[in-house]
Image 1 (cartoon, rainbow, N blue to C red):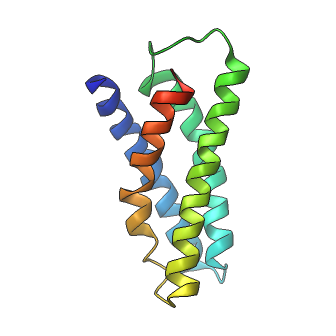
Image 2: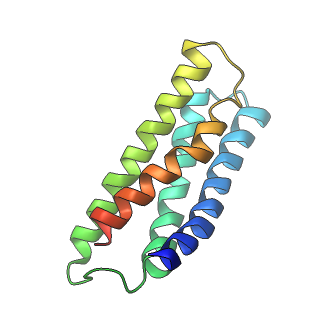
Length: 125
C-alpha cells in the first residue's frame, strides 16, 4: 500500500497540478466563468488520470479481469471528484464571493485524499 500511495501521490499530484493550472489559466486569461473552467479542467484530468493511475499508480493491485467495470468505476470516482471541486468552486466563489483562486486550496488537499481512498478500495480493488 505504501508504494501505491507514493505512486498515487506523484501521479495524483501531477494530475491535480495540471487541473489546477488549467483552471487557473482559464479564469486568469479568459472571461470564462469559474464553473465552466472547473468542468473543462475536470475533463482534461479524467482522461490523463485514467491512463496513468490504471497503468502506474495501482499497477498490480486487485483484479483486472473486467476492464469495463474498472473503467466505469474510475469515471464514477472522477465524477465524485468533479462534484467536490464544483462544490468548492461554487461555495467559495459564488456563495462567499471569494476570489477565483480560493477553490484551488481544497482542490489540492481534500479532493486527492478522497479519490485515493475510493480508487484503492473500490476501483482498483
